Structures are given as structure tokens and as C-alpha cells.
Length: 507
Image 1: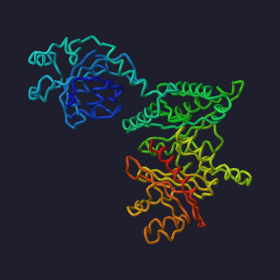
Image 2: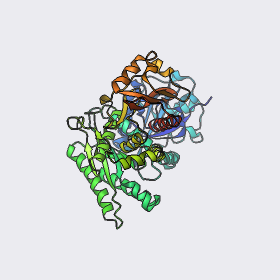
Image 3: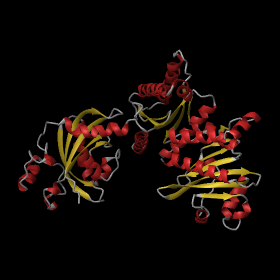
Image 4: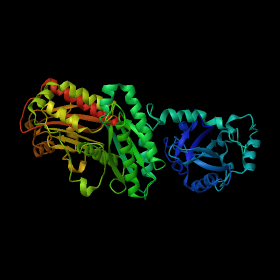
């Protein structure tokens, strides 16, 4: 059985993990980027915070503490903590401290030797532990540095720093990757209960033209430049990351004035526009940005992302190259208008090029990870003669609806069906439920029948989505006001579309 001996972490001034080595990752109960105080027994937190603050405030370069730390076995373990100052700053500019934890239980099985009321580990106490157990501190790596009170070995963090670089930075841009920016956003919301945090989603306009006309290497250069523009505009006011393709997320958590937010967004928008106006080739690359505000109009990451995403596509529909900050009095009455398809020739082209629309869905969902795209669903809807595409997920908390009247991504404004246990039994082995006529479910599931009748839907294909092997939502492809039998090809396509949406939502 593996026993934790020692490990090292780096935390910021608000006690959030920045770096941890393999030993701490295997032992510590909290996830990477979590708050260390959540793993420290409450009665030890005050003394530990005091010890860390003394190092942060430069009262001392090295401090010591004893704490009980929660492991993955859900038990608290005594730890000797050596806290040292760091010359480095976190990615968002916060001061850092380095902490080395040593497990004395490895050397002294009698835990009663430790006084529960001890606040700080004295040099004498550490020496007594070592002398009693006849441990050579200079030779035993797990206690190396315990008495080097003013010396910090800069090499001990090389492995962790490499892990940090490899796992937090986007490979194509010098900004955070999708996992890291989402984790940062969630942590920012957790620690900013009484302060404002702005969550913004940025999507490049006309970027596909760069890749198609000048190649992906030139597209990569554009992305790198955009990343630098965002970082320069943000400064120390927030961080940015890439969440897929040409879509970015910004977390702006250090501005106190609304005008500061607008200045940041304006600088990003205008600098991207002018960067590519001055090019001889005139790429025409601009950006659209949607912004949501915490805690005023969203209490968690999912709701904020949903609002920002809706504002992004509202910005797109209004002509691109703009930012929209969500204000409910203005925007709750608006939905993104559906693509205007009155041209019979264009309609015919969509119906003939169904495969192209499906490929577009796969490309944007699985490659670019774009969660809501009105154009894609319009092409699919008209191409496959659908009247509605609806998906409901995250236990019914989030939803998106495309109809021929427009798109809506506010779950409060979408009529949805709350799945029952009977509903789950109606699916086949491929997670598909095909309803050619409402009479087929009249006796089996009256609530579903009532939902479809209110919706005006006569024929429907449901795809059931899963998260962690449990049903979590569904995608519905509906036809209104006319009953017709779905062909085998149409059912197969609906299954593929449903699976692509599921992979995109839960990846």
C-alpha cells in the first residue's frame, strides 16, 4: 500500500493551488486548482493562514506549521509544513508561496506525540522527531531542506513547472487551454461572492476565410496575434483562454468600474479589426463578444456561459464586429432571428447538400467545440425538412432550441419535457426513440403526448444523451403539423447528429 512521505505545492495569495507535484496529486483530497483550505481541518486553518501571510508579507522567508490535512482516503493526517517565499507570480499576476509537506507518521507511528493545540512547528519539535527516530535529515530526501531555513532549492519545482506549462497552456496560443480557463472561471466565481466577475466569450468573424484562402499556418499566426491582443488589453484585470477553434473565453475579475470593462472590450475589438485592416490582403478578421455578469445575472458558471453564448450569437446576428453585455431589460425580449431563407434555389441547394451540413456540424462541434451555432442548425433544419431541433441537458438546467422562427438558449423561455422513468424505457439499443404518430405513445406516456401536442409536433426522433453512463438529457428532431414516416436514412442521420451534440456538450 502506497504511503505518502512528502510532497510540494505552490499556492497563490488566496490559497488556490497553482502547482502540485505527483506525490501531492496522489494524496490531496482536492482537485488541481482547488482551494487548499478546503483540505485543512478547520481548527488548524487560522494558524496556517497566519503562517502563510507572514511569508507573503515578507515578514520572513521561511515559516513552519503543523496541520491536519485531508487525504483521498477521506481521513485527516498530521503534516509538517515548510512555507517558503517565491519570486514568481501566477499566470494572473498573483503572488505565490511554496509549501513542502512532510508526513511525520512515516517516522513516528505514535500520533499522540503531537499536541492538538500546537500552532507552529518549532525547530526544537522537528529536531526531537528526527532525533527520537534516529533519522539523518541531511541524507533522508523526505526531510531534505527542513532545516535550511533561508535556502530554497529552485530546482525542486522544475517537474511541477513542466506539468503546469504542458497542462495549462494552449498548444497553439500562449494563453490558457480550455480545461484551465474553465477551472479558473469556476474558482473565480467561488472566491468572488461579493464582487463582480465578467465572463465573456469571443469568436473571430471571417476566420474560416483565412484558413481556406491562406492556409492553416497563417490561421495559426492570426490566433497567436489575437491571443497577444487579448492579454495586452486585459493586463492584470483578468485572464483569457481558448475553448475551441477560434472561440475564446475571458474572465475579467479585477475591474471595479463598468467603464473599465467597456474599455477592455473596446480595445480588443478595435485592435483586432485594425490589425487585419492594415494587412495588404485585408483578411477582414474581426471579433464578436458576448458578456455575462456575476453575481447580478448569473450565480454559477453554466448559467453565465449560457448567457454569454447567447449574447455572442446575438452580436453575430446584428452584423458582427461588436460586443454585447447582457442586460435583461434589453435582451430578454430578444432572440437571435433565424437565417432568412426565402430563396427556393438556396433551399434546394441545402436539401441536395445534406451531407455538407452534417459535415459542418461535425467540424464545428467536435473540432471547434462551438456549443451553439444558429447557422449550422438552420442548414440542418431546412436541409432535412425539420421544424425544430431541441436539446436539453445538465438535468434539465440548460437547453437550446432552433425553430424556423429563430434560436433561443435561455432555458426559461423554452418549452421542454421532463423525462420520466417510462420515457427511458421507450429507447432502443442505439438510444433512439422514433415517433411517427402521436397515437403510438398515447397509452404509454401521456405527459410526453401532452408536451408534443402543445408543441404542435406530429413526428419526432429523440436521441438520449448520457453523462457518466447515466441519462442526462435528450436531443429532439421534430416535424410539425404533418405526420410522416421517418426513413431509415433520416433516423440514422438523427442518431449521428445526436451523438455529435452529446460529445460536444460533455467533452
